Length: 149
Image 1 (cartoon, rainbow, N blue to C red):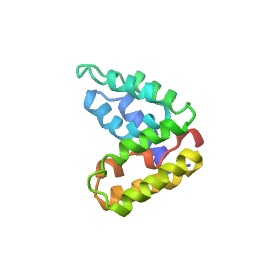
Image 2: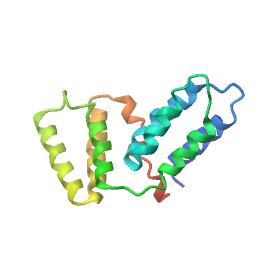
Image 3: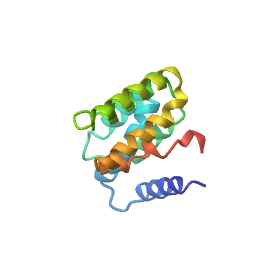
């Protein structure tokens, strides 16, 4: 079993069983999931954002229900590219001309064949490391495809 999946289960268990629940725990969890959810289902992405707006609530069950539902969705090239664009936004102003060109080429490949997603994700992850974007480096977007586990 993938160790990241084990961590997902552990965090889910902790959040579902907290004695002192607070929205900050779900917000942190959302920071890890958000681009993976956006890639799968932008409608659910928006629903989760709305769900977390009420800072006095702790909608843990609905939060995980929506995440699970998002991961049942099939990938489409449009949704994949949208998520890539969001992630690439962290580098748009700091990427070298060579990196910008490589990104453009990889986007074209994904438009032609969604299986090129693995290439662009590796590229985006490498940029995250190079430019020290810890927020992205910790994202499940790069590591988890729950649908395939």
